[in-house]
Image (cartoon, rainbow, N blue to C red; front, top):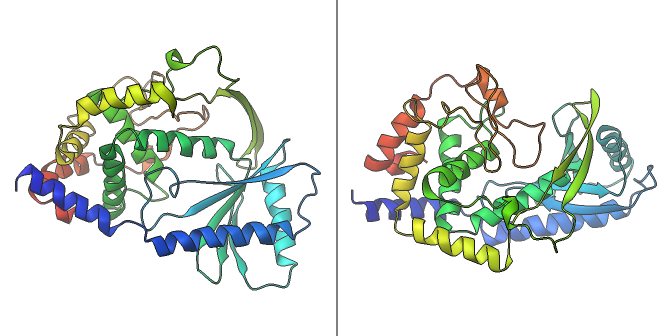
Length: 332
């Protein structure tokens, strides 16, 4: 099969996995209904101003028909996320209504979430408090997705591949980790820019440092400062986009994916390099670490830490590098 034909196969797979306009409207209507419903509740025991934001794969440029919606409350002062979610659950359950159903409260995850379902549309929404980095990360990923359509296409295909192969699950890779691996690879091998590079920051820009405070898995409070600067629009973004286009425009999508799989194979440098997988600053791995990743903003979070005990065989990347050339339609 010629590369042009292979790319056509990949594009068809992408089209089949696009979210329909009808489902997008369902999501929008569910969010509107949820906000309206929440405004009717007396759910502010903390006496603080509250805003709402939606984030996640629906908005980061790498969404599919299976993508969900994440919803966070943003308060102007610190609240314990778990106490806030418990109180919110209590308030929702006290109201006589059959529109929204609480499916689960997950208190002891890295980010505490409450899963709530719109009974009319069957849309499930993950709710949390003060996940500001989740909102900012969504915007960063979207800025990368918009650099070139192949960035977006490759990221979505890798999510589909990882789910079909069973390596994207709660005990192994996350979709988010696969995306960071993809963007890191493009920076290393195809000169994709680091949008967080401080050299692009000018003195006239507003303060971009934030103090993040939160409760870690219900065990301890944590706080740290983070610079959330990145380029996402304007003349500098256009310049970086144009430069990257010149490098990647002539490379078939199939070849990009093949190179990605080889990069993370047992013969590649992806997992064997001395540095953590990162799309921002380089950080050395701890001695003896093989699988390690730096989150773009969250210094306390290693998105692939959990795979150290659960991912044993890199040959799945070796195999994918061969199949993508010979039989791509079977991979996704």
